[in-house]
Amino acid sequence: MRPANPNFLGTQVTEGGTNFALWAPAADAVELCLFEESDGSLTETRFALAHREGPIWHGYLAGIRAGQRYGYRVYGPWRPEQGWRFNPNKLLIDPYAHLLAGEITYAPEIFGHRSADAIGTGDPLIQDSRDSAGFVPFSVVTDYTPRPIHRPNTSWKRSVIYEAHVRGFTINNPDIPVEQRGTFAGLGHPSTIDYLQRLGVTAVELLPIHHFATEVNVFHRGRINHWGYNPLAFSAPHRPYAATNDPIKELQDAVDALHAAGIEIILDVVYNHTAEEGKLGPTYSFRGIDNKTFYRSIVDDFYDDVTGCGNTLDSRRPFVTRMIVDSLHWWSQVIGVDGFRFDLTTAIARNDGGIDTYGPLISAISADPLLRERKLIAEPWDVAGYALGDFPHPWREWNDAYRDAIRQFWLADSARGHSKGVSDLASRVAGSHDIFYFRGPTSSINFITAHDGFTLNDLVSYNEKHNLENGENN
Image (cartoon, rainbow, N blue to C red; front, side, top):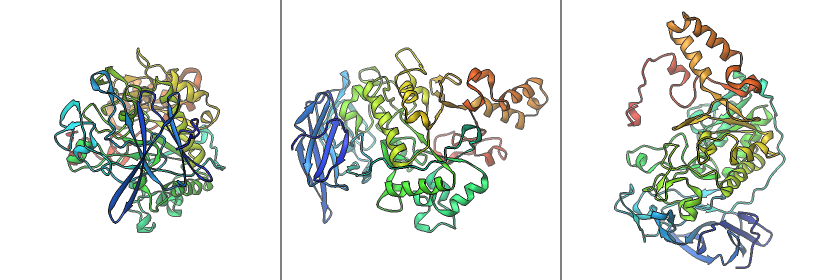
């Protein structure tokens, strides 16, 4: 392999071939693995990425075009007690991949440590020697670049946001062809758009559409992750949401159709953790590339979990900040997304001492000339912190104080008959000045229900939850 362009991470298709570049500063060696399938048999060809510039390993392969499936094997020390979890037996997803192919087979092979079963039971200090190729998704070379986007550019003052799930929103719509229901094509279908226009909404906020995985324990309980808050690849559309073999083009078409109708697209993005879970979790990508950099730890072999999902991405690290900003650019410039709602935003705003809403990642996004023109929405809490009202301009924030005040006044007789109930309601409806001060009323995203908890219909119909089917006793 000859040298590639190390400044362009991921893949870059040129006239004669493809550049490959992977950030892996602590690795001893990196192999690029190309895959072909014929008659049900998988063939792997490995190439050493022998060229290195600083932390980036790179190489150019002639003749490689869009659609090529690939992955990486990264060599380095296996010392989990010190935070190092390199294992070249595990095929790794490119953190900059824009498309994945294949599904996860939940088996012992997906774990970096020696697991006795398909749920990760075993000693996390012992390296596993089984090959995970064929058990995990492949990265796929793509050739999409930034494009002109004709955006509605609705002001915050006029914005009415409708939260929706790509599959759940259209799966039972009889006006959509069966093969398009529950897909990006269904999202952009005329009947979907007509419904949204009749509601009067100006933006659709989609639950996560980056490629995500079902958690290991959830899968083995016979359930699936429906919402999508468990990312495998931050910059790849979730392939099962596509009705065609080109999820990127299908999503672009849906975005363009919504834009033509005056409706913006906001993505609920999860940059606070990954699908690799805790120290007994699987190795899909980040853990095998540079575990110590990508994840926060309390001690080297124990993850700092403020997300409740087993790990927390370490946004204090310069490269992690760069990766997230690059991902946001891709969604905005290539797909055409108009804004982002950041799941558990305080988790990506944590420094060594606690929550810092002016920390590296939040500041980088706020100052970015492209991103500051998009709608930026914080969910200002995580499982261990709360920061409503603390985020800087141009961020807006989900206002749970508004939610609680409206619910209490609406549903509780005591609140309607209490002077504080009336004054609290007035404060929330008037823009929550006591929370946002000089930032103005449009800093508050006022909501009553969301994907967490009851739907609006359930909220006014039931006094208690009936979530018995989820198997989680809540």
